[in-house]
Image (cartoon, rainbow over all chains, first blue to last red; front, top):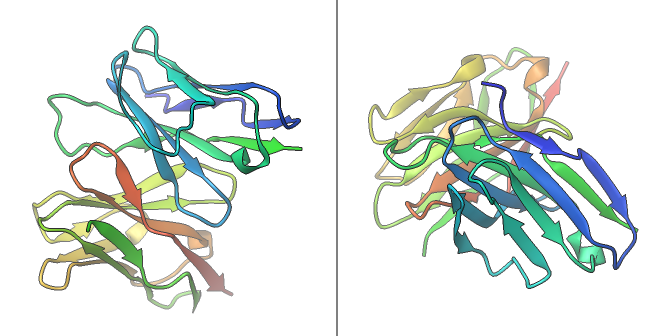
Length: 116
Length: 112
């Protein structure tokens, strides 16, 4: 169990640029989740996948945001035309999923995005 | 409405004294409840979870929490604080809809 891995750890970019983050879940975990955490707040749910299927998206996920999990393994979160308000920590989590009830989500160390 | 409330945004205790971090939730049924800890610039680490088994749940690093349905509470305690316990603590609820709902967090400061 190598844990949830997120890359990059930090991303600094200019407003208007596109950014992409990657998350590698724990091996054989079927469910993968994305959360956003702004300074001084708890994380807020963005979206989640069951294998390659994206099953729910929060209203926080505007049309500038897109997430994929093409082969049911790693996932990417892309933000297009970044805005100042996108500055946050983006957290990825995974859990075993179907057939394993009440299993907690395991979190990565996050990607901190700073918009200049 | 389903919600989770952490009553204290900041708690300070002296090293070696007990820790109490308070959490209340609002739900029409008994959800799954968790406490996570977050150290600066790090992700979230699971401390413990309640999933309708024993009401007193023991976690890592000497922490435990008691589920009280009548009070809709899930307070986190530790008998003796250690300097390494200084961090942000989140009470988290799974209302059964596949997404976790986080409290606003409690920053725990340990006084030497």
